[in-house]
Length: 307
DNA sequence: ACCCAGGACTGAT
DNA sequence: ATCAGTCATGGG
Image (cartoon, rainbow, N blue to C red; front, side, top):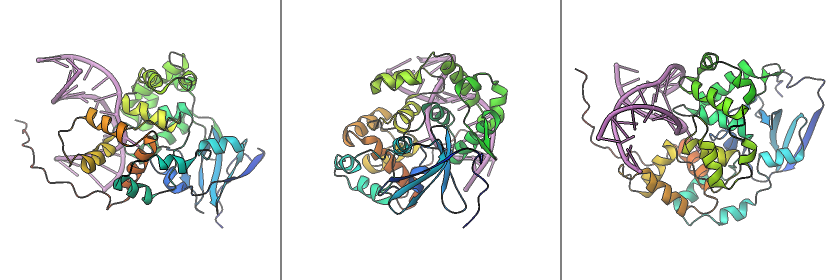
């Protein structure tokens, strides 16, 4: 078996856990664009963070194994949503051949319940970035501002820490124009202008209103935070990929359908756990090259030439 | 060189 | 209220 460098401080007490996790697909779950700080190890396990604690996870038969300092059964279970009645959730899905195909592609895909602050930062940084680049930014922020936990291991910096940074230092983490957004957002959270703890207690619509008050957070980013951090499974984020799959499969690839119509369709069609439906569709069209029919050829738009 | 990326913000209608 | 332009940066 391959030897990875020591995960943590050897003095730290390691907790080893085994949880029942029938059907969980770590690969799909951890690479489906909802989390950005997990890496596959040389021996096929996964190294990442649960509630700000470093850990290593892998599947052993139907059991999810987790090793790391300070881990608890409840924390790991909650993080991977192992308490969720998945059979009942999927029973609420509409009879929809596209959704059934998407779910068949990765039936073990699950939605995580991540730490809100880091999820907020990740998705502020997500706009006009590819997933690999969001992962890179997350790593840069940890290296530049996080506490060193071990060899190459840095915790994600909290809001107070980023609020003490400068926009230029954030920009050095390849943030581009998002540096200003993240810097302002960090101060909004550090000053309690917006409370991520209180948002957890609010109904989804009010929680969304609070999130959108944060700089760099619009409807889509707010929805991702609600779904991937606060466990609001009724939230259906529509990004460029989901926009594309909805148009192509449910609106005859029409480019004229407005966003609000896609929104109304998604909210009424996919049922009370439509966030899961959204994640299956998103993962499917990104990973299965045969998922979508080739784009209809639209006549090339006449482009104005610079004169 | 060109187009795209899990968008948000701004200012002009 | 709607709508185009703009915002940095890296990958393909």
